[in-house]
Image (tube, rainbow, N blue to C red; front, side, top):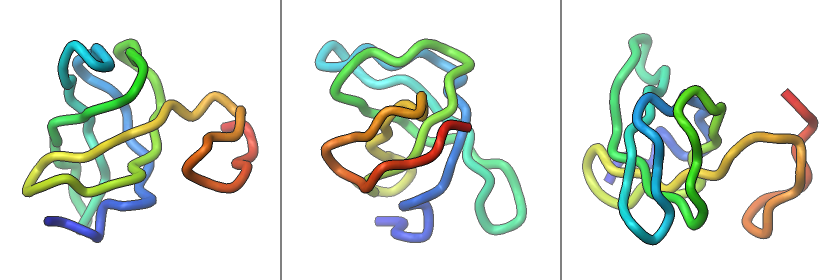
Amino acid sequence: MDFEVVGAVGTVTVATRGADGPGEVVLRVRGSSESYLAFSEEPIPKGSSVLVVESRAARSVTVVRLDGTPTPHLPHLPPT
């Protein structure tokens, strides 16, 4: 697992489908941009900014959409 990515902000490049399946997110980590398989509770459209809340496995993360609303997993985040 890659715990360095937890807390990273990225951009969805392939929409997530919530319970129907993962998408893809690009994160800036270790000085470069890297792609990860992205899971989410709710569908998240391509182009959305997301926050990584969990490292699931190598190159696989759980994300939440950054839209200025609090999430049940994290303290309130200011709008981006």
